[in-house]
Image (tube, rainbow, N blue to C red; front, side, top):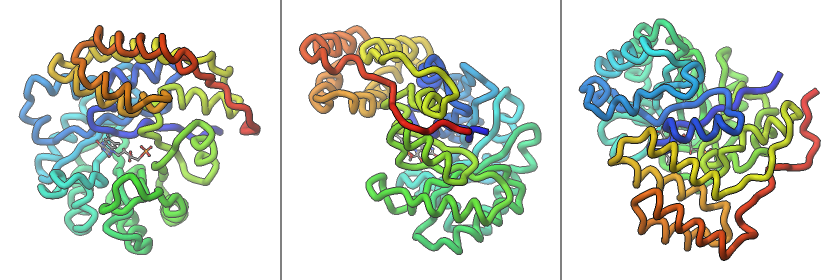
Amino acid sequence: MSVPFFLAPMAALSHRALRELIDEFGGCDEYFSEMLSAPSLLAANPLEAYYLDNGPVPEKLVYQLVGADREILAKAAALLDERDCRGIDLNMGCSAPEIVRIGAGVWWMDHPDEAFALVGQLRSAVRHHRFSVKLRLGSDDNLDRLITFCRGLEREGVDLITLHPRTSKEKLKRRARWTAVEEVKKALSIPVAGNGDIEDAAQLVHRARCGCDAVMAGRAAVKSPWIFAQARSLEGLREPLEDIDLLAVADRFLELLEKYQPREYFESRAKKFFLYFCENLTWAHHVRTLLGRESERSGMVRVLEDYFAQNDQDRYISATIRGSFKTS
Ligand SMILES: Cc1cc2nc3c(=O)[nH]c(=O)nc-3n(C[C@H](O)[C@H](O)[C@H](O)COP(=O)(O)O)c2cc1C
């Protein structure tokens, strides 16, 4: 049995255009949405339709909610529960200062009693779908406290936990501690997904063998939207991929972005994507600077065409990794 692969929730990145691009390479098992603000969802402003887009595969889409107010979160969860999706996830891991300041994201982990009350309320609101929570380690590396917290979530009826094993103070520099994922998995009866620092398909396969119930990848899936298909191919579960034409992938992404994003989001989301995608290029920083001056798809494609005309060795990359990862 192969372990499921998840696309991580990433603000301004985990939207329909990226999901569709990943899906065209063969997809992954579940796509977590970028975090959706519960109050904005209830205010039903016109841009919410874009956040609610569950395509291209609604049964694989997990909506992630973020918020500070129990009642509002419960109403937003009930609203999402009426939509076609795989599940609803609660963000208890975001450590961005503007989120923590309002009492959302990882703030809940520092306030366990409030967190358990919230989760109990959301559990009652989510009646038709899987209800999950995404976490960090908490404010420090105290594994006992983390396990106590996770057991509390389990008791309140959470169906799945995703652990991104960094403390709330750590940015993405210090390495994720995957041993914590293994320890939490051992301590709970519900499934536990691990997340953090997957850099390529081989690591995805490696982590899938470390005992967790699912592996989630974020930034690497933006850099290499084919990573999940490549991992399945390493496991011997699908044919190897053809060589990847980076210009064609970038152009396709921009086409999808134009199709699915509101006009006012196009430029910022394109640039966010290129922050990671350009890591495939020898002169990544230079290309990002040039792309940063463009606001339209045509200008961005022109920058890339010029770059590949001068650096043709960068344009095609092999997606075939040799190794002995076949599952028995
Ligand atoms: C640009 C960006 C936006 C993110 N937004 C969210 C978010 O909306 N919700 C969330 O739970 N985590 C968010 N994260 C954290 C990721 O889901 C993930 O936990 C983190 O990037 C580590 O995984 P990775 O090493 O595979 O990227 C974000 C991360 C990045 C880089």
